[in-house]
Amino acid sequence: MSNKKSMHSFHIPVMGLAYTIDSPIRVAQYGISSVISIIDDEIIEKMNRLYHQRNNFSYTEISNKVEDYRAKRITAYLDMVHEVVHQKFITFKQELSKSKEALQQFIDMLPNQSDIKKGLESFSEQKENFTENVLKFLENHLSPGSIDVNVMTKVDKDNFVNGTQLPVIYNDAHVSLRGFANSKLSSSIVLSAGMNPRLYSYFESFPDFFPNEKGELKKKIILKVSDFRSAMIQGNFFAKKGLWVSEYRVESGLNCGGHAFATDGLLLGPIMEEFKQKKNDLIASSHELMVNALTQKELPVPKQPLEMKITVQGGVGTAEEHEFLLENYQVDSIGWGSPFLLVPEATSVDKETRDLLSKSKEDDFYLSTISPLGIPFNTVKGSTNEFLKQEKINKQKAGSSCPKKYLALSKEFGPEGICTASRKYQTVQLNLLEGEKEEISLKEYDKRKSKITEKSCLCVGLVNSSYLESEIPIKGEKQGVVVCPGPNLAYFDKEVSLSDMVKHIYGNENIMQETDRPNIFVKELKMYVDYLKNEIDEFSESFTNAQTKKWKTFKTNLLEGVSYYEKVFAETAFFKSNLEAVKLQLANYKSKIAALEIPENRKA
Image (tube, rainbow, N blue to C red; front, side, top):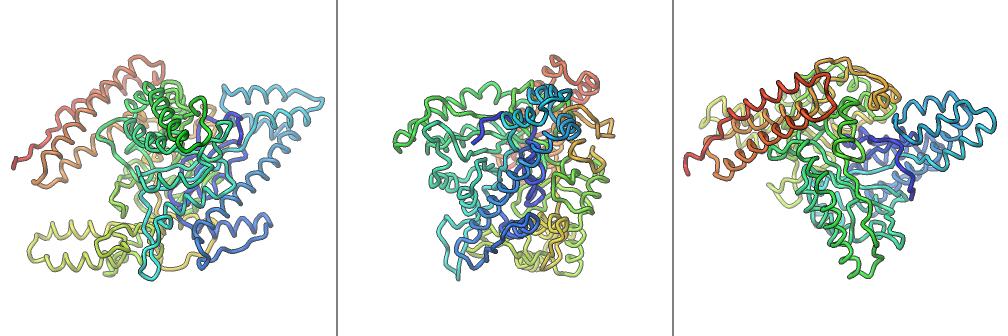
């Protein structure tokens, strides 16, 4: 466990199932933290083999016939990543201590106000004992970026053997947690997609998540949340079990990559303001509950509350936005996700997909309904998956063969579950629709057919890009690539080096050609206004009083959010170059929101 302060004020969040599968191996030596998805043990095993070969490690395959093979594959891969990062970090420190050119290149990648940067700059003119002094400084101040992992809590399918359901600990997310918990890593697990009480309770099975006698945690819990209320509820749930949430990773509900968990009109600025104002309440509540639980369990009790970080991500694209979030909301780090899809040194993306992302414009990025989870999903037009999916629909063979079944969560046809993107599911639904064809309009028929066939196989589509980049053979039915960038990527239009991307984040270089990119808060506001309008338009004539109440709350929250932004932009020293444009945009959206008519339930 390292107490050294993080070198960077940004991190790379998880992207898809495999876009960050080996990101720590690529960037951790520079002090950059990143997150690996650990749900798909198949690609994990193949990447494990690949990196064992590259590093001349002795590799032993973990067959799917081995008991608990999925958890063991995850543990083995994470242990290998830990070893490779450790070796690369040692080599990197040696390189910096022997080459002033390499040292200067690294200095250029550090935040401008960094104490480590200032310390390293003092060696640039030193001639005597350069290597010895630099190495000593590096040993005392540098640590590799964290090798964190992600589990989507909803991807926790029950598993069966010969028709018999296995115990809950063999559910998908439980297995992933066990794989991480049994690894050598001292890092964090990021839990996303909402609360899963059964999974959260399973954390009690692993001592590494409890504080030791020194009040240290070997393994930490990070919760990805969309608002303060959710953070308080989930944090207290863990605390009642003696477990501490070390970080709340706040993500924009809509202006993000992958699955979009829209709030009821709560905007990112007001949400972050609440975290800033109430962070101490969160700490105090969790600490009191944790102390009581640890006392009852007769485990070591920390005298003081443990460290709790608040971080934020979703749609950040300029150094000014980065600095504003750090300063105004006093957060510990900013997540930069989608822009790193254009950085070959950082993410696992095939060339065709990277080219698509760099060429795609604002209108190409959209909030889709392709996810089998039934949750809005940010993606981009023109992917190979989109083409192949339509080709199968045209041939009357809609749906996927569903080889992995991670999202086979619908219990519609039995306890073992089925995925709504599978051919089996879609065939049944299309046959039922065909039986109703004579009773409905052609427009309604086409709409319902599209709703059935629009689902994509994310389990395969979100890993194929990594297979292609690593030149790992892809077996089975062609699914193409599904890619899940946030809409912010529209304003980045070229492949860039890791160094240039980091310099862009810290304001030492500008890689963005787009001059009329909307402010991060204005962009999110637009998405929420469009979201509310679409939801009202999409609803049929039959809706409940509860739905009307929800829409009214949504509208109220949006109007309050705009008022908050008007005050923030009037007082801040940031964003002066386009302040007038922002004010006009806020006024425009305020008028649009006010004019939105919330329909009343006619049957009430």
